[in-house]
Amino acid sequence: GEDVEQSLFLSVREGDSSVINCTYTDSSSTYLYWYKQEPGAGLQLLTYIFSNMDMKQDQRLTVLLNKKDKHLSLRIADTQTGDSAIYFCAESSGGFKTIFGAGTRLFVKA
Amino acid sequence: NAGVTQTPKFQVLKTGQSMTLQCAQDMNHEYMSWYRQDPGMGLRLIHYSVGAGITDQGEVPNGYNVSRSTTEDFPLRLLSAAPSQTSVYFCASSYARAPSRNSPLHFGNGTRLTVT
Image (cartoon, rainbow over all chains, first blue to last red; front, top):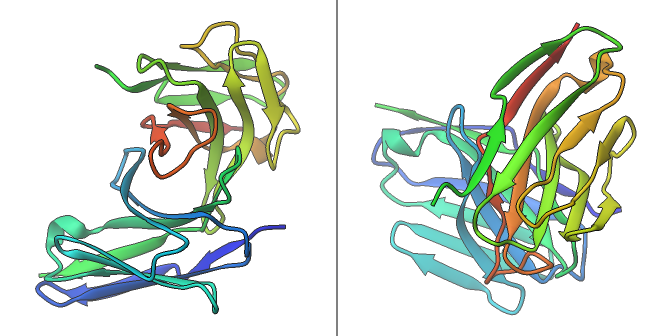
């Protein structure tokens, strides 16, 4: 079945860039998402990329998609302590099910 | 506009007890779903609904029942709780019948359930 994999932890210094990586298996994925989860809260949509795009930039966030390798990354420029959270990669082929990765916990050191 | 509201926030059950986790949304969303979140496993889809009166199974439906009698509410029932159901449960909804870039999932804040 479909699967989404991502590393579980990432630690960066404040002001550095963070890069969170994700791989997926479903070649029919249409939408790829990044969600952010802060402690005690639900997931909030950060950004998405459509499968026919290679890159999307939104302020400090850059999403890169390598469709051939089924690899998605999220780069956060000038990482702040407020960016500490769990980041989930998710994919959907446009149907009723969105498949989530296990989440990458980002630690930002001051 | 409250969004997606889940109650209770925390619950402790004994093995064999039953309970209902409540989920309500006030955004007139067609699609509603339940996920469970376990460490190292991400979110797994339990059940989903594409409209009132329509429900279907997700990845891990065993031990859970759902119903969708109104557009707003999508309760999740545990008929006989087991320790394996200890988890954090999230309800999520989207405007369209199928989540998409223009209709992403909106999540509640979760219910933390412990079964002893």
